Length: 410
Image 1: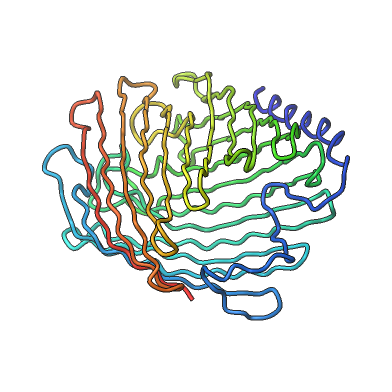
Image 2 (image 1 turned 30 degrees about the vertical axis):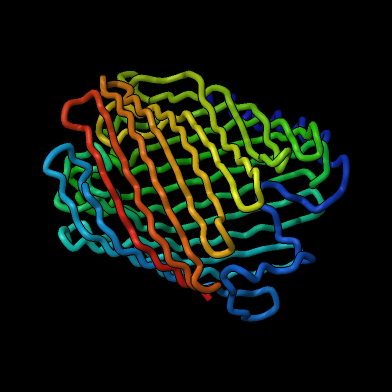
């Protein structure tokens, strides 16, 4: 029944949107803008290796050296360790007047001197294609294959001797209709994510799942840089284990406003209703308020403050039927001169483990500074303090992370 409601909402957006989307002509900007070739290229950042007309290859390498004070996120007997991280990668961009293709590879390696069992090697291969079919129609396709891990202590699964490792395969497509200066614009997208754990199978076999998602959005312009928006979306989550009772459907119905560079601010605010419906009756369903908001304020050309907040549902990792999460955060990015930049951030997450009595409050404060020695070399340092307060005995923790960083590009 809920799937029919989502399909109806998406269809309504299509019908309503077509009344406005062709009102005026202009380059399409559905959700991902094709770069304007008439504008000069930015020369102060990473430079690509030219491989032909409109083709560039951009390699990079990041190095981090630091210390983690609480590797397993425990309340007592915290395990600390020195850590070294390596992050090489490259991105290939192919551009024309009506299309842009991107392909890339990103590798992340972490080495813990006091806990080699927690060393990790994560990587991601990805590709995107943005196509402008005509002045009012755009398409975006994306696909990626990711190899990642859940650090020990980050889930509620029974602890094993090493982190839980997984692989995900994802694909998505987005269709957008509406010229840049039209009164209305619509977006329809669909995708799938397949997640499979590859080790610690005694405890991770129940977390393998497939997620199918779809969404529709309608934007109605009320000012040159301001639009009202309406969104309906659904995530259908199917667990691979035949005896699992976690299969469910998440729905969201949101409305709000989005604006760009109005009085030094830009942002998107959406509020509405979210639901989670389980297939089995023994699990606790949810229907209530939900929101997504992100606002940027730029009082000076070299200083910016970002705010965000969300309320959403998340899958259980071992405790409760699911998690209802409220997140709040802010960050201040300031350029002290052309070389020195700092970022101060603070975040808070309130987690309600629905189906149990557990409630957590996690706060995090961080500070980061980067200094550009040369156009292609940046050194920096960062520190982060994270603290969790839980009403369940034994789940409180405090964690401090300190890192020195080096970034290299061309």
